[in-house]
Length: 183
Image 1 (tube, helix red, strand yellow):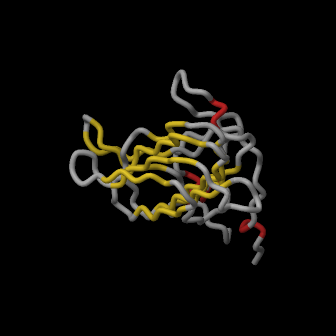
Image 2: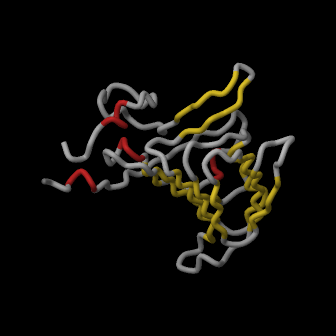
């Protein structure tokens, strides 16, 4: 058996998905993302690595996931990850019901259990760069959102090429989720 499919070398990415009118310079480029099963077949984990240098309202929309998510906030003045000077506002719980707003002001990890509503996530003040990592225990990034038409699960695999059709961008079809690393 070959273990080659269990290794993935990070490509540099310049993910600039921002709301219209927002400053795309909020994060240092390039960035790194591990896009789960698309990049290592059979993976049940995806993660992004970003260094925020300016305030930015990252995620305005409350949602939940079918599996746990972990949000990691560290100082980005390596090697001292405790050199942290920021205020990041994060909401856990369903807005209008049990929501609680937290302020991350020092190195922190947050576990968001499966099924728990979370967000908005707002990097309100950044006086020193912040290393941010969102790790979701699912093979593709996505969330379950409440919409006027009901509950909708949406996925986003980033602005990357489709693994099976190099002439198109990934549309989160999920075909790569079916691939087994042993084949």
